[in-house]
Image: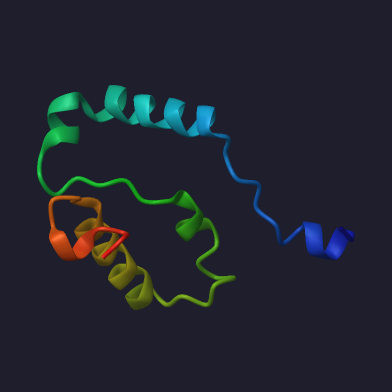
Length: 82
């Protein structure tokens, strides 16, 4: 990959790093907060790549709301397979 192309690529975390981040969130916020309805995790990539994705603050807010609704697997319409 050329240098111009590689600088636009954000390296993805390994599954082990993602699991560690989830444990860190639990330590930071506590299990009680993690279990409360309305708490969801979202990819930091959205914040870091917002400008490159040409997302306005409104776009980002809408995406975060959709992630929050999708996060709750009990919602029938929110499942990835639905």
